[in-house]
Length: 362
Image (cartoon, rainbow, N blue to C red; front, side, top):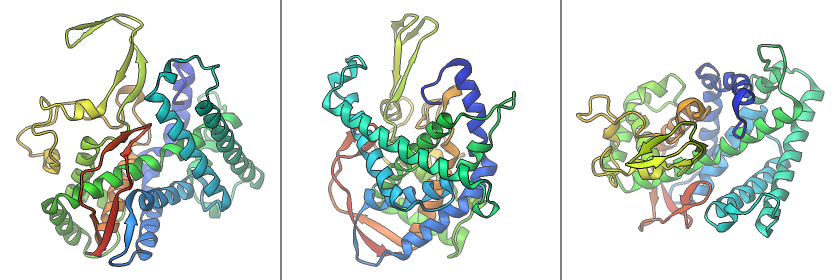
């Protein structure tokens, strides 16, 4: 669906969208929290951790269980390794002259990317084949893959096997490392903002009283959601949005944009524009308070894109990040080592070097 256009895109979006609507996300919330509780059970006071590594492991477990209905054994590692290679090579191409080479030019990096994509396609294809052969299993639950297989368009047509595979790969690849990146930056920002962290602890104690959160708590955790939104403003994982083509002439910032111009959008740049966000370098979750004196203008914050092609998984990601922060922060503070990390603009905006932290019980 990411690469589709016109009627083909409309058909695929209509088929995939029901899988991530709020009613379905409600059902996935229990899995998110269950995985977070199990992950926190493995932490110990004083332990040293790689924050990104920990968050990747947690969100990968969640997307595998919500997508495929359970763990996938050795395929989990093979998929993770292949996706890591693919994301690294795509990110490297975005920053190099290779971006402007024709698609048929096979650089070493592109060969590594194609090999990784072949592994991803093969592994996910086998998982789908296993599910199709096994038929419907009520005990498996209502996972994302089941919804993709059952989806029908207005003419009663299902997604083809290749389309199911492509959408499953997209959900798997985009559904865990983006959230892991958001969580990593959030822990860093909280570690540098004791007042925000203390206010988070107060809200969690007041709203949850020591119990794990549930889907209905998402709307009650006002400060926690503001922390996540502000983290996405300061460090948007998708630091640049894939290009679109102008179908009508326009003028942007006094510069003409003729018909046919390729246009890129940068959440990183817009989110740090002082016209829309006073003191833009500062981490201030209170910006998102509904009663804040200065409201954030429409479309100034767009970590999930915008318009008709906005990310379908935005609700899933926001609920997941909020519930995971709420679950883990009840039990631990992550004291990130001193120093200011350098953002690395690959396909996602991640710390250039591992963020190391010490776990302390809350």
